[in-house]
Length: 118
Length: 115
Image 1 (cartoon, rainbow over the protein chains, first blue to last red):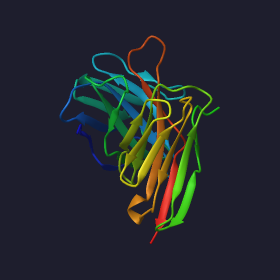
Image 2: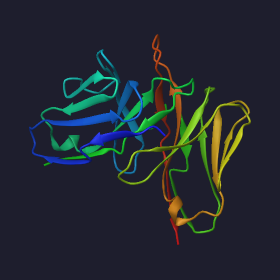
Image 3: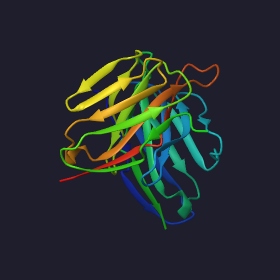
């Protein structure tokens, strides 16, 4: 099956620093990747849609200057949390849609990155 | 308003019991997906249902898509501690003019199965 990896799995940083999270599709090409945020015991909230070679599309209420997304290749998207603050602490998950996916839009999720901002 | 209403939000049962999780909306879906997520991991796709009235089985899990394609249910028979996790239903919504589809998730059901 399709595999999506994320790196790092956990990161602890000081307030004010920036953190980059990588999302890779390992065995398929992903023209579209999605970034989600998840709070404890809650569902996933879509933050933005990342399209290879173009600007990301952000959901309402998500600060694009705060959460920088780059989708430089068909297998890699990155999310950079800039000037992180404790309220940015969360579980960040990416997903990737197979370029050859059918109409059912099945997405494959990464294992998530736990960000803790001190 | 929530596009997808998932219930119950919490379910705590004993090993061997049966349970059902519901996912409802006022809109018609072309397809609906069920995911399971364990703590500290990403969601894993369990099934996609696409045809009204469709029933799919995955071992002890039975998934049903309503005839009108507005609702779905997940039934687990003889639950085991290994079934513990967050269960999520999701549908695809398309932003106007785009070719990709975004997943919209229900609120999730946290299932705990006690030995």
